[in-house]
Length: 126
Image (cartoon, rainbow, N blue to C red; front, side):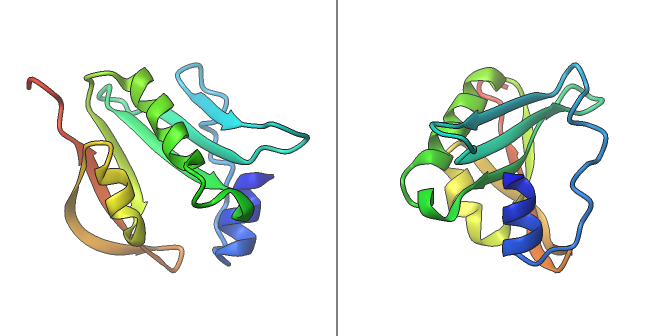
C-alpha cells in the first residue's frame, strides 16, 4: 500500500508496481511499522551479476524529514556490506544517496515521467 500511495498516487506515476521480484528468495524487504501501516519501506534485490539493487525507497508524507529514510538506507547498507550496489534515484535525491557512498553515473533519464539517474556505490577496498 505505501509504495502505491507514494509512487502511483502522490507522484502521479502510472507504473505497474508488482514486477514479480518481491517474492524472490534473494529479495529482502525492510520497513518501519510502529502502528497499523508502514511509515517507510525499501526493497533490496540481487541482480544476476551479484550486485545489490536498492529500490522502492519511500516514506509517508508525515515521516519525511525525520531521518526514517536514512535509517532504512543504513539498514540496507549493513546487509550489503562491502559488496557493490546500485540504485535508480530520482534526481532530487542524489545528495541523500551520496551520504551512503553512491555516485551518479550516466545521464539523467525519464522514467514514468520523473527524472532519474543511476547511482552506484564504489566498493571499499576494490
